[in-house]
Image (spheres, rainbow, N blue to C red):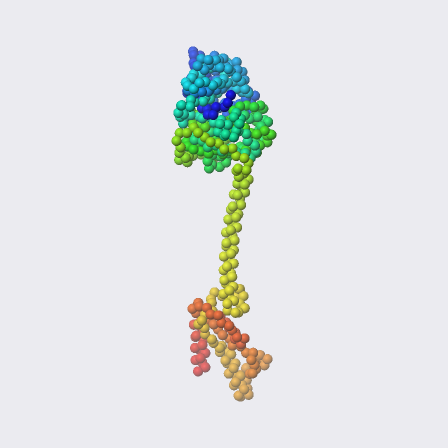
Length: 459
């Protein structure tokens, strides 16, 4: 039978299902059951949404719907517990598969009534889990329902009747309008392998990593096992992205269906995320964070190959290399600026034609205003030499003759003191017989006083 293109899921906890009561109440409703995959022999999978309606005696249930197809599901392997399945009073075939007893049929478009009678007991209860039905094409579907999207109906490239198959590196993008979603798979040891790892995220939230280990799951094919349940989001348009980052099995990992959960009954169950989330991710999201959208039961899916998405390793490498690249650019800029300043100082120093080293640079620049002074001691020596030549005696008694310059010598030098007063600059070339000493502005006043004092003494 071809898979219906769109189905509505009605959980056993939904009030639209009527449980027939009698003098003895045989229906019980265990809640809070495990929903994550477990290593079970029977019933073979965990109950959807963690709830069941169990019949501990002979009783029945009914459901009214307007559509073209219906599929009711019990957990367990003993189909004798389901006595009869009727649609509009007509008996339907009761079938089984691993861990499930079900009755399903296609009916003409229009209103219909499903009635199921059971014969459970306290030792072997009949466990009703829920039902699926295809609504009438003429029916306007409310946004407050749980919609099941068989993935084969969302991707034209898939062969009708086949699930989505993922190999290592493959991914799925699923756009939906709703508050939360649940993903189901026919998990088996052969397809799952020793350990498979998945990574998923919704919108711009951080990715959630999860692992599925076949040693904790069922040994055989079990239809409709939940392997991923998201937390609740604000109603609106969302994008779900999932990637099979590691796959140890020799068969592809399959996804059978996705349920978009918008029913108030489902939301009131406050389903826990599978796998459990870290506290930072489970914080409530602001209602305005989801994009607003009109009521919609449409969805789109895109199956990605390994090359269609940057892997986690690439993302980590980019996150590490980008700061290092920015730091390198910053340090390079600082280095170039410092080299530029050093080059400028070097050119300023050598513009004077001298041999001043970088360590000898002073915090003032040669000035155009200079005073040239001959030290009194050198003038005194000259006068003493002239006096000595005229009288035949010498007043220089503390020097040896080798230290006294010869009258005709051309090796004597003149000392020039340059005082920098205005911060200006001048490039002057000295002569071999001149010794130039640069002084800061504070020496200007001192030298003026010294020159005045010396001149006064000589006069």
